[in-house]
Image (tube, rainbow, N blue to C red; front, side, top):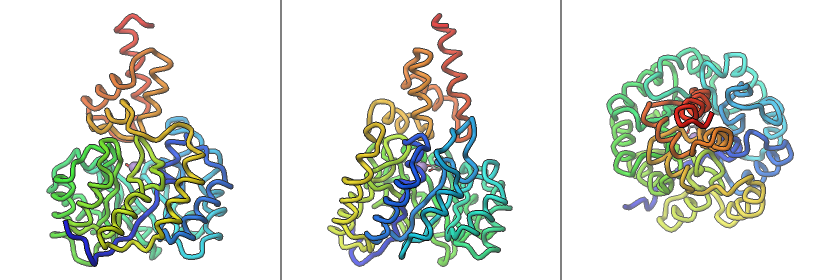
Length: 342
Ligand SMILES: C[C@H](O)CC(=O)C(=O)O
Ligand SMILES: [Mn+2]
């Protein structure tokens, strides 16, 4: 693979996808100190919100330590060069949330839908584009649809006003060939001014390899998390990706030693559990399950005595998708009853 002379924009997820791993309990001080250190290291884009995006605070998804507005107002004024993004899932986040984010100074809005449901993004993408925001369509669980279907859904998002489309491996299921195929088709068929992005999860330890495949196939933006702080086994670890890109002669503009220090000195010490490919995280990738289901399944294991791995395999078999978090406890109860544990 030859990426020499290429460049890529990295987008940090540790303060948004990492909220899943922290059960949405990152303090304002932690947000500000981590975002400031990443800003200083040259990270160009940093996402800040509840793990499930704007308006995620709820019984279904979990209540955060602070509101999205409080996090955004604490972080954005401190940034010297980094731009802040916010995720929005239509149905969870509303148009009012979108306006609030814009008023707080959010630069990039990423409107996320399941990979076959782009049509629900029309209103939010249309409004963000109208407000002249950097507007991204974010197609989740992209392993569940063919490359052609992903392209069709991406074209819908572009028609609503998105200037960038993400292929999102929410389950950490994809292997590099699939990434190459999906990103390659998007790059070949979408207008050249539309950027392509890739968001990986490290459940099969493919985060870095998949990100390289994405760049080779034409992705201009790559998501990851410093120290991998994210749902499941985490996102593509950005300090590792920066080192690999540097060895390959592909520029990211991020200072390697500074970003290593953010990982080691700020993020790793605040992890509630090691972010690693344990058997349950590996099962997410192997069975194609939404990464943020991990801690819900572990909790259900403790409560009902059904192994998280068995729950996740069954959730994968049933084709569950993001938003169906309530099914995890429901399934655990059903299985516990069937096994005479309840
Ligand atoms: C709401 C999800 O956490 C979005 C995401 O990061 C993914 O699908 O992956
Ligand atoms: Mn994710």
